[in-house]
Image (cartoon, rainbow, N blue to C red; front, side, top):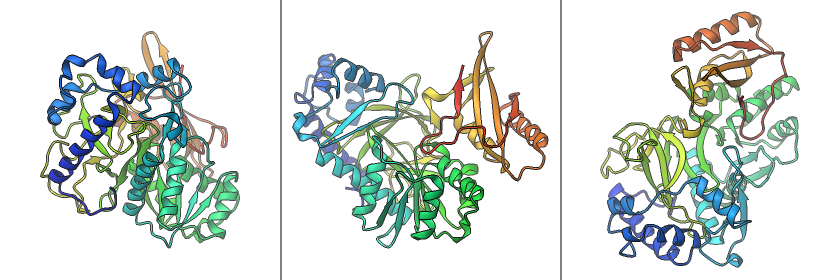
Length: 438
């Protein structure tokens, strides 16, 4: 569906409704997980399908990651969210397990094809063509995004260069030697590659990279982080994207407005709710993204609470918003993924998200890496930071004082900052794990 002429929202919503009805017909009775889940609410399901979107939201319960984890623990190894016999499935991937135990996910060829199609939309928005050479700066493990990104680039005719099994220096030399024009990695690793280039005396000015496609962390939509990446990889432009194993590729960055993510509504029906009340978020207010997968029938998710906090440019229910500057009508998320419901910490009464800390610290060019520690003390949570100054920093004490002042100004918090020796903090190829909770 992605890549076809863009539809007005009214027509798109009608198409989504047809897809949802087909999904319910396929799932009910065939998929043990959802058949069992719907049995518990049978009084609300007197008919086989809802009559409209309002009734859909009223009668279809949310699905949570905790339910999926419990289902796989009760019915190992794959759980019961399978619409077809096991012989129909050809792909197995799993979540990272950063917010719980890893969840395995199976896909049929049809479901996999639908997700590759969505990833192609990510690339098209970034301007990738068959003339590009794409370097994938990661090892190909069980995480789904690696494989989807590679196959989508291949489908579009680009030259795909795998970077698995190479050191960071080896990947940099591959970028230069083979003239890679697109780099796929996490925001953290794009910064780390530039750091390694300086350490290894590799001249990054000779690169031909014009696009850095990032995912896995919110950094791609944080202005300070993307500005840092673009300054190090000049003249390349950063393009953000986000997705997850359970649902697939969800958004792509607007070509006309950096930091604005469009939901691939050809593949998802999106809702935004108040995470506390579960009622629809008020127009333009921050809320939790809820997704129903439309093309992943083999392992579907209905009203899945992603845990991602977003701020829509317009309410998802509006059918005639002004088109985006890029000409698209798809739901737009201002500032990308703002944080996760389960990542927020309360520091002396102030709600703090890791993305807010990232935004402050990436504003200091002399910060090479950092680590945040949250410690419980006397019933209160305290936040402390360890920062690693870059090689060019000449006033470490001044840097520490400026960072502490920035936190007092931005968050009205006194956050202790300690400088640590160069190279003492961990570096990350995939999702960075900079937060330690004690």
